Each structure stands twice: as structure tokens, then as C-alpha cells.
Image (cartoon, rainbow, N blue to C red; front, top):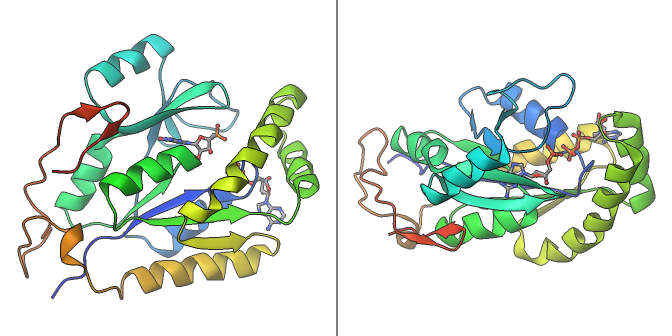
Length: 222
Ligand code: ADP
Ligand code: 5GP
């Protein structure tokens, strides 16, 4: 019996450590597919188009929404971000685990479509520490940092929708905790309600995924 592919979602207030921890897990678990999101945010120094994000204009993004190309999308810190349906569809068809870095709304919306998705909330012990890390990261100007910190207060209230919480004060410990969550996900017994068209023993055993009609910015799983 094959286990079902893991859909692992990391969310955190900006500066909480998602990117750092995602990078670590991808190195550790080579077979993990990373979902490259599409965004209208300007590219940061050091980022690569198609690797960190696919960077598009707002006009292009809205066209993609209209064409129903996103499984979920959200306006986060003043820019659009979305997960192309293709990312998840391709991973599940191949039976591959997939890692996503989403804001809290995106995580909640994805879980509505994929109840088996595992939502991990990452945070640090104080907003003061968050500010310190955002400043040290040197990727955003002070105005952007303040906006991200204001949003952090709202995001923290969403913890209740998540399955796991990692307090990223000690990076070594946080890495081990994330890896443990991934390993535990591979030991789960799939629940029938998660799965359509089970094909035991076949590679990529979640087959024939059909995508429903668009409902606001969330797509229904058939
Ligand atoms: P996010 O992707 O959630 O916005 P990052 O992964 O970019 O956050 O982390 C923000 C900053 O904090 C980065 O400069 C990163 O190197 C640093 N950082 C991450 N984890 C820790 C930690 N446990 N202790 C100290 N600094 C950390
Ligand atoms: P950043 O600009 O710091 O890379 O990301 C800003 C926020 O957008 C983060 O909370 C990140 O998780 C979120 N994000 C990145 N990609 C997506 C996506 O495809 N969908 C949603 N909903 N949020 C995303």
C-alpha cells in the first residue's frame, strides 16, 4: 500500500522563517516538490524568476485569475500571490509530496479543497524579534516592514486553523520539528474522505483529478 502524497503548507508572519525552513526541508527531502507561486510583487535581490516565484504584472495575474489558473490566490501585503493549479495537479498525479509557502488565507483555502493538507504555522516569540529579523534580512524598506508587522498581529489570530505550531526561536530545533512533521505525515493512514478514485498499488494512485468550477478565489475539489 502506498501512502498518499503529503501536501505540506508553511505559513508565518513575514520574517517568521518559512523560507529558511522550506529551504532546509527541500535539501533534506530531495523528492519533495516545491510549489512555485505566481506573484505581482517586485523581485527581490537574489531571487530568480521561475525558481522563487514566477513574477508577473498585475494585468497578467488578473488574466490568470479569469482563466481559472489558480487553485487559490490572495492579496498579501499589497501584492497578489497565487498557487497555479498545475503545481498541485502535477505533483499529485505523480504521487509526489508537495511543499507550499502560503499566507494564512491561502492555507485555509487550500485546506478546504484538500482536507488532507497539513498546515504548519511558524512564528517567533515576539513582534520585537520579528521586527529585528525583518530589518536584519535587508529585503524590505522600513515602511514595508511596518506594514508586514501590522499584518502579523492579524495573522497570529489564525493559528487555530493550523495543525502544527513551530516556534522558530532556535533554528536547529525548528528544523528538527519540521522534519518530524513531514516524517509523521508519511506514516498517516489515508482517510477515504481525502481521496477520490483510489487505485491501490499503482504509481500516482490519486488519479483522474477533475477540477470544479471557480467559486470566488477558491476552487472546489470534485
Ligand atoms: P519568511 O520567509 O517567513 O519571511 P525568512 O526565512 O526570510 O522568513 O527569515 C527571516 C530572517 O530571519 C532571515 O534573515 C533568516 O535568516 C532569519 N532567521 C530565520 N530563522 C531564524 C532563527 N531561528 N534565528 C535567527 N534568525 C532566523
Ligand atoms: P514574500 O513577499 O515575503 O515572499 O511573501 C509574502 C506572503 O505571501 C507570505 O506570507 C507568503 O507565504 C505568501 N505567499 C506566497 N505565495 C503565495 C501563494 O501562492 N498564495 C498565497 N495565498 N500566499 C502566498
